[in-house]
Length: 457
Image (cartoon, rainbow, N blue to C red; front, side, top):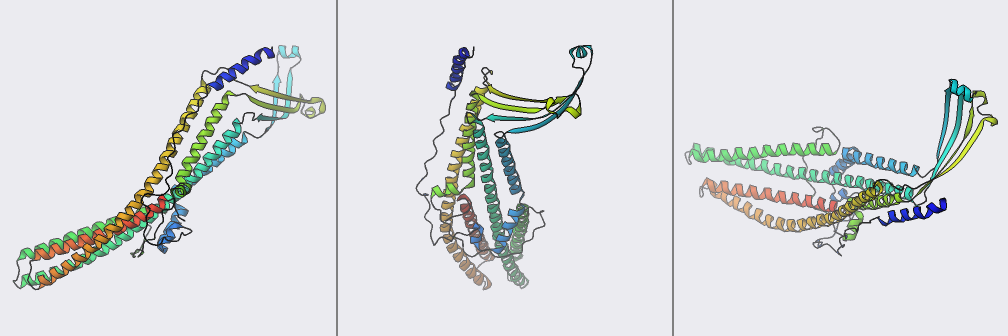
C-alpha cells in the first residue's frame, strides 16, 4: 500500500514546488564613485569619538549626553530592540527539544465501567520529550529571519540615536543664532532710542516738525515688537531641547552665549562608506534579508515535517504504587506530516511573503537613494551658503558705512530723517540676514554629518 502511495505523494510534492514563484528584485541603484558636490574647501576636521565634539562647545556636549541618557524616543527604540531579541530567542526555542512533566487523575464509575473493570481512580505521572527534526531547514531559516529582524532593530536604535543627536545640535545652534539676533535687535533698539532722544531735542528747539518724532517712535516700537517675538521663539527652542533631553518643558535653562567661531570642515568621503555607516540603510538591508528568509520559510511549507516524541511514566489506582516498576509505561512516536490539500493556504502564504520581500527591496532601494540625496543636498547647501555669506558680508559692510554717513549728515542737518531711518532699517535687515545665513551653515553642517551616518574618517 505504501509503495503505491509513494509515487502519488512525490508527484503532489513536486507539483506544489513547481508553483513556487520567486519575485525578481528591483535593481539596486549603482553606487557612484564620488559625490557630485564633494569639493570641500579647507582642511577636513579630525574625526572625534562623538561627532558633535568637533564643534568644541561644552554646553552642546552636555546637552547631547543628557539626551542620549533620557530621550524617550531612544528608550522606545531600545524597547523594540529588546522585543526583537526576545522573538529571536522564541524562534530559536522551536529548534530545541521540548521536555514536559505531566500528572493527572481520572475517576470512572457506572455499570459500564464496573462491567469493563475500569471503575475507580486512575493516577498518572510522567515526562514527555518532543523534537522536530529540521529536515528542510525551515526552522533554521525562521531563526535567521528573526535574527535579521533583531539586527534591523539594532540599526534603527542607532538611527534614532543619530536623529536625537542631530536634533539637539540643530536646536542648540538655532538657539545660539537667536541669541545673536536678539543682541543685534537690542543694539538696534538702543540706537533708535538715541536717535529718538536727539529728534525730541531738535523738535523742542523748533528745528524739526512733530512728524519726525512720531516716525522715530514708530521705529522704536516696531523694533521692540520684533525683539519680543524673538523671546517667544527662544522659549520654544528651550522647550524643544528639554523634550529632547527627556525633561519637562520650562525646566531647562541656558544662559546666552556665543556660538563657536569656526565651522568644522566635514569631508564627504566615498558613497560606499556612507552606505556602510548609515544605520537606516543598514536597517533597511537587514529587513530585506529577513523578508527574503521568510519567503524561504513560506516556500518550505510545501515540504514534509518530521517530529519525534517520547514519553515515560506510570499509571496506578494508588498513589503509593504510581512509581513502582510494575506501573511503568513508555512510548516512542515518529510523525511525518505532509499536507496535501489546504485550500490554497500555502500558496497564499508564499505570495504574501513574496510581496513583502518585494516591498522590502523597494524600501531598501528608496533608502539608498534618499541617503545619496541627503548628502548631495547638504554639500550643495554648504557650498552655496559659503558664497552667500561672503556676498552678504560685503553688503553688511557697505550698509554699515552708509548708516555712519547718514547719521553724521543727519546730525549736521544735511539730510532728512527719512534717509537716516532707511539706512538703519537696511543695515538691520542685512545684519539679520547675515546671522540667518551663518545659522543655516551650522544647520547644513549638522545635516551633512547626519546624512553621512554620524561620522567621517
